Length: 475
Ligand code: FAD
Image (cartoon, rainbow, N blue to C red):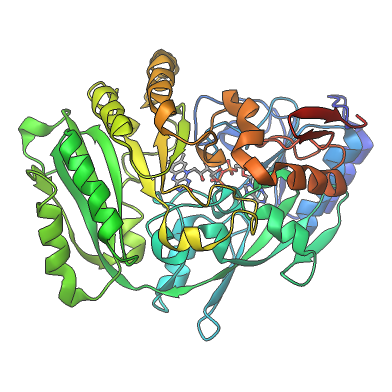
C-alpha cells in the first residue's frame, strides 16, 4: 500500500524538472493559481506539484515521481470531474490538458486522440470527414474521464457508449510501464478502462471507432413541466429507431430569444433532440415533437453534429459550484416521473437541470460482462446536478438533491453511473460495478496493487467482496 508523504526530495524534484518537456508548476509560481483550478469550483485544492505534460515521457516521469515520493496523484484530462478527482491537496496533479493531438483515418473510420482532448477537439477533427463517435453533450468535457467511466451522449442509442467505441488505448500504469491495450494485447486492461474509470493508469491516447454522422436535426423543444409530456417522451423513445435520440431535461426556462419572456425562470420540460436520420424525414420528427405537449418554445434545425454538443456550453462555464447524483432505471416508471415533476418545480437554477439520457439501443447490444460498464439493462441514466454561482448556495441545495435522489430510489436500479457520482458516493462503488466488481478488483491488484490511482471512484486492490462477505487482502 502506498503511504502518502508531503516531504519532497529536492534532488528528485530537480531531476523531474529537467526531464519534463511541459511545465512543473509549484506554489508561488505566477501561473500556480490558474494551473490548480478545476471546472467544479467546489474543489479549491492546493497541490504541491502540477505537471502539465506534453508527451508520454512527461506522463511516465510524473507517475514515477508520485510513486517514488509517496505523493497523492490526481490525473486530469478535461477537468470536469464533479467529485474533483482531477486535483488534490499537497500531492501531484498530472494535467494532460496540453496533450490534444488527434489523427483521423477516414478510410478505416477510426481516430486516435491524446488523453487530454476535449469532445470539442474530437468532434471538430472527425466532422470534416463526416464522421463522429458517441461523446459528451458539453463540448468542454474531457474524452479521458468520460470514456473511461462509460460515456453517454446523443449517439449512444445508435453507436453505443463512448467506451464501446474504444478500439485500443496506450497507457502508463502505476509502475511506469507503457502498454498498448487492444483486444489481442493486454486485453484485460482494455476491458477495465471501458467503464472502470481511471483506476488502472493514465491513458495517453484513445483509439475510437467512428460512424458516418455529419449534419443532424437537433435542438431543444420546451413544454410546461408536466408528467404527461414525460410519459409521451418515454413512448417516443421506445418507438423510435436508433437514429433518433433526445435528452429529457427538467429545468427552468432559459433567457433565450425563442422562449417567450413569461416562461423565463419557470419550471419546464425540455426535450433536446438529435436526429441523425435522413433529412427528408425531418418533418416527421418535428411533428412527433409537437405531439408531446403544448410547445412553449422551440429551436430545432439542421446543424453540424459538433454544434449540438455546444448548446449547453454557454450556460455551463468553468467556475460554477456543482454537486451531483446519478441513477439508472429500467424504463421511466410513473413514480420517477412524479418525482421529476415534484422536485423539478423547485429546480434551483437553469444550470441545475435534471438530465435524463436514453441508453438503450446499441448500448444494450453489449453484454453486461463484455466491458467494465455493468448496467447494460438500464434504459435511462439520470444526472441530478444542482449548479450554483456560490459555494454557500450550492451547499444549500445538497439537501434538495439528496431528497430528490431518495424519491427516485424506489424506481431506480441499485447502482448508478460513476461519472454522475459525487465524492460522498464512494460507498456505492461496488454496486455501481455490480457483477464486474470482483474482476475489476483483481485487475487492480495486478496493475495497481499500491492504489496509486485512487482519486477516482476507487476500486480498492485489497478488497474482494464475494457473496456478501468481505475478504481483506494485504495492505
Ligand atoms: P477530469 O476531471 O479531467 O478527470 C476525471 C477523472 O477521470 C480523473 O480523475 C481520472 O480518474 C480520469 N481520467 C481523466 N482523463 C484520464 C486519462 N487520460 N487516463 C486515465 N484516466 C483519466 N458524462 C457523460 O457520460 N455524458 C455527458 O454528456 C456528460 N456531460 C457532462 C457535462 C458537464 C458540464 C460535466 C461537469 C460532466 C459531464 N459528464 C458527462 C460527466 C463526465 O463524464 C465526468 O465528469 C468525467 O469525469 C469528465 O472527464 P474529464 O476528463 O473532463 O474530467
